[in-house]
Image (tube, rainbow, N blue to C red; front, side, top):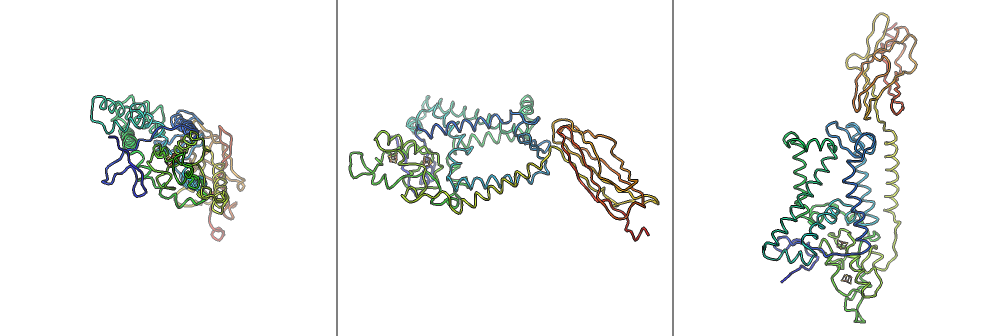
Length: 464
Ligand code: SF4
Ligand code: SF4
């Protein structure tokens, strides 16, 4: 006889009392949210697959070039010394997630988290295709090992493995680029053991996660679900059951019953195996499947939709809904501040760098007639084309001679150059330290970079 587990609030559904695994097979559902989730999921998958193919500024649109220690992002190039921006980027992303959670609960988990998208839009679909609907899948799980079951399992797991390998190859291409990955694939794996090892590890992790571990990642491993209670409040929009309208549960023919007919459709479609009627639970990933399921039931019983819906806990309790509250105002102000700072940093980024530093050793050299300073001029281009730097200096004391730069300096694509520059002035022209500024007009792109350093010399007392 087929058995299915009833959710409770004491333990997660996917773990039995004896610690063994209970496989959840969510039933098929259709409805507006399901359609939009599929469309959005397909879009995210397309972005993941296509980004390494789309060129921007001579590189893939998103390319973590580990070999050259550069990160290309839609035409912007970041060097290893720009890593500090990554700190702001990561904290900014983390903060945005907090902000969205405070407003809309676990919208990220249900709609955009890569784990949910891969599981629901790729692996679960393969399973549906091979094993059939939820009832057929559960029957197959509990049936004896026949030829049919064995062949279905072999086909399904082979497809899981193939998809995991493809997804892992795409991931690696973000770090080595598609042409280089293709080159690697023509050679023995031993020639590129690191990349091959990463790809194999990732493919194995994907296969394990999506063929077996599944929703347990969200329930046991992911910290985000656990901190949501600290990020949300009674005005956060979540997915909830309208107890006032639904209770007491009963048949439609019962005049004393509420709108919930206790059909359990919302439980059957839940990918984490919970009953949304038990209230907001950590296991709810906000996938909206129960909304579509219940709306179907409401349509069939000629009752208004929305017994299970997106609403705040206050809204579900019949109280006033507040969207603007102190926490949201503070988050909004911080978000705009963060965006302004990020905009400021990004507009200051150039596709080339110029750095002027004093040469190690003595700060200056004095002869009977001159004072001399030596500097290092470090040039870097992040462009995928030869870049030319044309120099000029600020106004220097009379008789100053600059040597080490004779005309335009070319730098090969994505490369760098270190020049030694000597600035020499007549001893009688030196009275005190002054700024030496090198200005470079950079081609192609025609923008100007500059850097300054102090010209040093002997104290005036020594000169007397
Ligand atoms: S689907 Fe709707 S009517 Fe059916 S049990 Fe769930 S809440 Fe009640
Ligand atoms: S309770 Fe509803 S929204 Fe939450 S995970 Fe289950 S089906 Fe998705």
